[in-house]
Length: 472
Figure 1 (cartoon, rainbow, N blue to C red):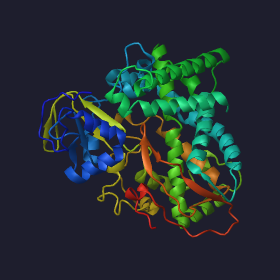
Figure 2 (figure 1 turned 90 degrees about the vertical axis):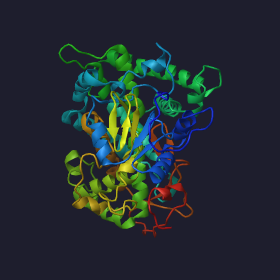
Figure 3 (figure 1 turned 180 degrees about the vertical axis):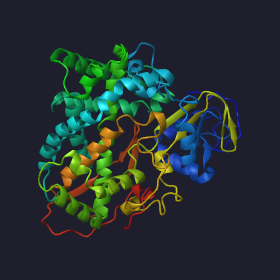
Figure 4 (figure 1 turned 135 degrees about the vertical axis):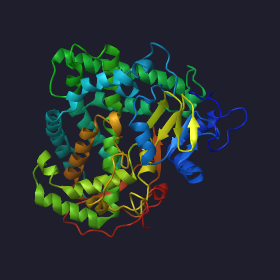
């Protein structure tokens, strides 16, 4: 984990005797949001995971985002899995994907993947998604309180399986979902980090077994697509991808599909769920958005052109993803040479961590940064490194356009059928599982019919109030 670098003068919390910096690293993976907020408050823009240690360093703010994310040659993406993956194992195979690749290999494979996210492909994905959204949202009970996190998760899963993999709903879809969730949780499990030995019953053993099951499921998806023929889904695009004779190797194909399976639906689900909560807590914004949707779309299925005619929708989602990015810390970069970070000289091998969540709280760019104010986006001038829910620079998320399109479709489909309301005694605590920030115990909201009298907005209890300034 590159914890044996020379000591440098970077402020941070002390390491514990005998453990050194390792326990602070485990603490971070246990609660990254709380750790980052505390480090930023205590030490400022640049903070070490452990005092005077260059192994892992946080850089908070747009200027550091630009320095690190714009230079893919000097700062490679952190390619190693935090949990050791034995050579030749299923865990190692799942690490053969675009996120783990760097330099010329990354550019070559990214070009190979880009046709899968072309405008024509996105329009095709939108058509597939519409049918799923219409069916699922149409079945939500009106006037009842239920777990909106679960509801959006199930909807996003079906959308992803249909558009990306051409798979219908069924027991295999649920199994794939459970495997991908378990994989994301275990890959940064403190228990697996501290005891990376395959002893039955340990987190590390569960991690290796989960990887083996996930690889088996992905290989079965690929085999089915080859046997049945290529279609219009993303899996077909990856299986058939070729440019100047370059194709994905079998290990790369498994890794790329595994990555899409793990990352495609949970980020979309959580962006949708956080937006629903923000609208429920700000009913005037919700009613105005419902009226816009009624005027532009009416009762029919929204098209891509309709979505582009709903600027208020974009403002609401931009503000939601600013305050509550689904991936609050995603950017780990390993320095390929010594470099200067603020007032500090750091050695080759240092890992720099960047955070969308902290970046989006710069009052210089976003006045009253903890307030939900969608109208700030009417005339807001934002630099490419000030707002980074999908990253920035040459490694910006290749699936960002698909995710943005899908979240807008989901929210429109839901608001055509009802409004979100906060019931009494609602508590929302945040947690980070894997790389995704989500409600710790679900998100209980009422899905009310449009014709029912609007209820007065209520505040919520819980640790989410540490991230968003909400009236109680």
